[in-house]
Length: 309
Image (tube, rainbow, N blue to C red; front, side):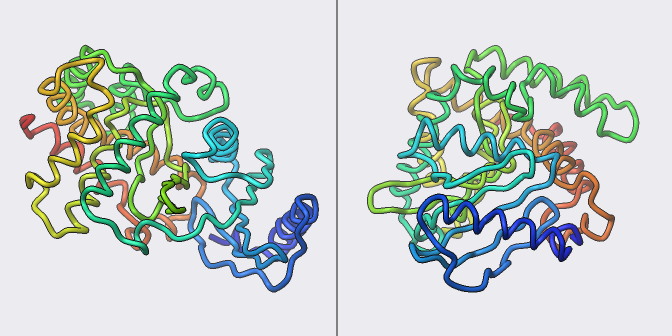
C-alpha cells in the first residue's frame, strides 16, 4: 500500500483537496487524518471551517467509482451521499460528512426491512440507465458474461462451468432487469440522517443481476442479530427486499431467484476482488483485509454443490 503513503502523492492529493474546499467555501482548519488505508482505497478526514470533509482516493483501475458516485449523487441525492468535488482521472473524491453510520446508530429488523426495500427501489430506478453506467466504466457483470469470467478464474477447465452457466440461464429467465448492485452493502456503508438512509462506498459496484447484493445483506443481518442464516426473521428481510420486484414475478419465483443469485454471486465477488487488488503486491493480498481469492473460489465451488432452497 505504498502508493497511499508516498510523500509526493499525499502532498498533491491534499493540495487538490484544499483547493476544492476553498471552491465550495470552506477552509482547512486542521491536520488531515489518513485513517483508512487499503489496497483499493485510502481516505483522509479533513477538518474544515464547515465541518469535516473526507478525501477518498482510488487507483486508476477503480476510477469508475468516482464517476459512478458523482452520477448517483446528481440523480438521487436523497438516496446516496453527495459529492463536493471529483476528479476521475486522478481517482479523487471530496465528500461531505454523512453523519453516523447505521452500524453505529443501530436499528431493529424493521429498520433493515426499510433499508433493503429502499435499496431495491434505487436499483429499479437505475435499471434504465445501465447502458449509460457501463459507458462510464462501471464493471459489466451481467449474467451472460459470468460463465466465461468464471472459466478464466478457475485453474483448469471444470465441469463446474457448465453447471454455473445453467444457473445463470435459469436466473436470467426470471426476467429481472440487470442494474447497479454493490457487493458490499452492509451496515457500515449506510449513513443515517434523520429519516434518510444514504448508501455510500460504491467501490465494489457493478452492473449485474440485482439479487447479487442479497448475500452480503442477509449475512450481515444474521450476524448482527446472532440468528441462523435461514431464520424466519432473516427471511422477512429478504422478502422486504424482494417486494419492489413483484411487478416482474410472483413471490415464490422471486424467492427462488434470490436463492439462485446467491449461488451465482461468488463469481461477481471474485471479479471485484481481482479488480480491487490489481497491481497490489502479494503482501497486500492476504486475508488480513478480507477474503482471499482462494477462499472466494472455494465458496463458488461449494455454492454449485448446494441445491436451491
